[in-house]
Image (cartoon, rainbow, N blue to C red; front, side, top):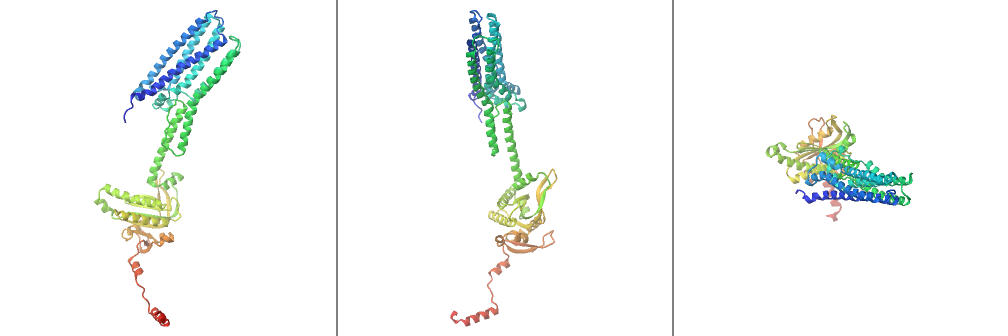
Length: 527
């Protein structure tokens, strides 16, 4: 992947630098305009005896000087941030902390310069006028400074978001909380309520500074409306907009999306929420991956059983149908073929087994080397497990015979069995234990030598549906190893005796021949 070109890196830096410079410039002149209007409408200073121009010139000169100092200060602060951003390297923790403190540092710059203006212009007014004039000027500058500092704080976080987003990636979340939602709300309250209301209190409270306060009150009301609208807009951009995006992201997560990533670009609690949502999606992806792997190992039905019962050695006895599949002469295959070729052939067989069993509602309980044990009726109950197992056996046999890669034997048996989790609290597995399982495994050994390669017990045929029973033919009766009672078996291929009896011509008995002769004599027209 080619590295980003320099202009692409410079674009966010230029946007942030120019945005902060423009913010500082216009907010400062906005505050100076507010101060000038308040003083003009109130007629302060009134006791300067013709020396007002000196105060005005000094005030204008201080504004220009403050702009130069503030711009240089901001450039210095930005330089510490822009270097690593332009170079495209990951910032150190100290550089990241400085970047995250950029809005607070800019607010301090603005507050310091306005405080200096209160001292310089207020003192000069006291020299050329009266202390009441100095108090009026200081309070007017205080109002302008509050408006400017508040706007700088709210707007600088919005302007510096591209840099903040990169810095947040380099700091632990517990160390990245440089601002809070509460501080933004307090600043917004200061702009919307405190600044204009403080101005009103200054104008109407004794001692009355200046002349008629009516025009100043109107101006303060207009100023409060303008500041309120602007502050609400900035608060909405910094709080409401990211919360809206988080709500949309959570809605998508609730609908099943797990590839979602929320950009972390806020240094307050909202940024922690953004990171938490990303942690949530990452955890859900990991859980789904583990559940998918777990399901591939044990089957979806077993996963649901484990989630329902937890890590308990639980289970119950129910009637199930066991289907056992085993490869014929697997020892010879292992000796003649390379191990990876044997694995490839077995994977092809097991793919057929899994597809057929899943299609008919069964569970592939386990793979045992070159064999597979499949269960119908546990852990999910089945309406007709015997019929499903017999159909599955035929489907597996037909698919493997068509491919011609392997030969196999399949045994099917029905009976009661324990189905549940066995083991210890630290290591257990879902399994099925019962005579039907053992019987199916023993039948598989005889099925390897039967023509149809499938043998089913009489109990399995008795439990199956009528349509399925019509497909099967009585085979032999075996005394299976480990079982005292003989087992009657059925196969899909009729025995030679059954084929001969089906196709043999009917032989009439002598009595039947006499009856036929008498019938012909009684009805000569039929001859």
